[in-house]
Length: 69
Picture 1 (cartoon, rainbow, N blue to C red):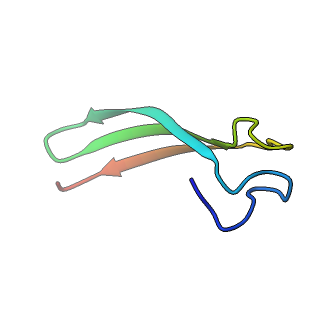
Picture 2 (cartoon, rainbow, N blue to C red):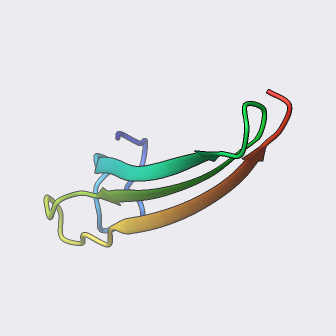
Picture 3 (tube, rainbow, N blue to C red):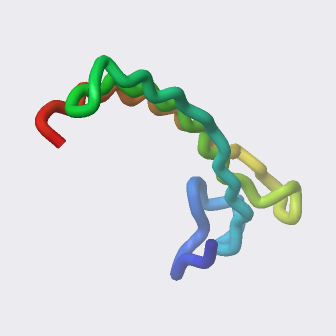
């Protein structure tokens, strides 16, 4: 990821590496209704290519109920 200024702090870099991974599960109640759960982890850092490498991690848990597909 490239930015016009150092992110996320002043002593880091404007070029950072990012990756994301996760998984999920979907359970069908019948042919029109289902429940699903999904988890994602996202990471951003400069891989110590600058003085500071603060790194940012975010996590998301998404629960969904689908009806009348």
